[in-house]
Image (tube, rainbow, N blue to C red):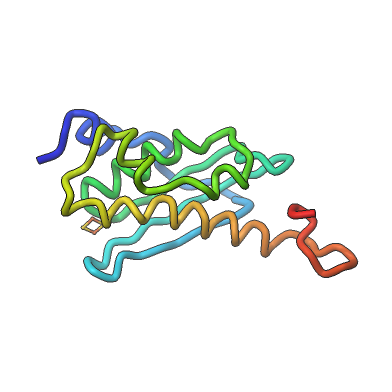
Length: 133
Ligand code: FES
């Protein structure tokens, strides 16, 4: 039911693993199946310098986390935040319709990691995160 691109990313997930001393960590779960995804990010000058994932999920979720990390690496955080599940699925040349819900996890986990990073940043005198000013 999966195409060759999905199977390739499932069998050889890119950017799999963990970043020690990550600047941000995002964890999301799919309540429908109990699967879990963790994203670790390193940020330099508001650019996503590095990203790794640990995905405890179905083949589609693993393939999505693999391709999503490739899509966002090296991009500005605001651009990364706009990543959609449709872009992830398109990069995989499509997913079976019943697996589209699984493609939410990667963009959501990446956004959660950015939120975590921005929450960890020191605040400026106006109480805003320094990275957003
Ligand atoms: Fe759980 Fe796909 S079935 S993420």
